[in-house]
Figure (tube, rainbow, N blue to C red):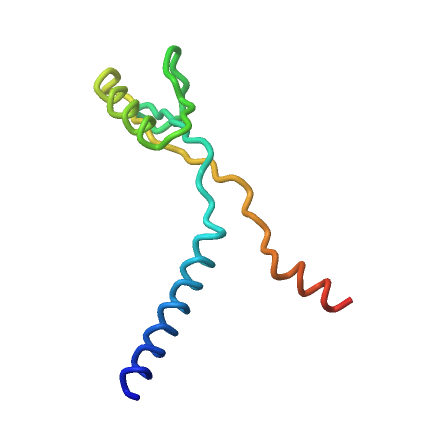
Length: 100
């Protein structure tokens, strides 16, 4: 009897943690675009000709930043991330339909 109860409790917690994990990752928003912002010595934002500033992945943008830091030592390069609009939850819509 104790083994069955132990398996039920373990199974319950596995299911609950699985549901919590699914709900937390369902609404995770990945950034669409990564941009490089360039600052001069005085902290002013500048634009340099011939410098690519828009990227789709984080790794590529980070690679370009390290290369630009070697080429232009008097400038500071920072990555800016644009986050898309957050997905709306379906739960409030379901509750509104139920209340009608």
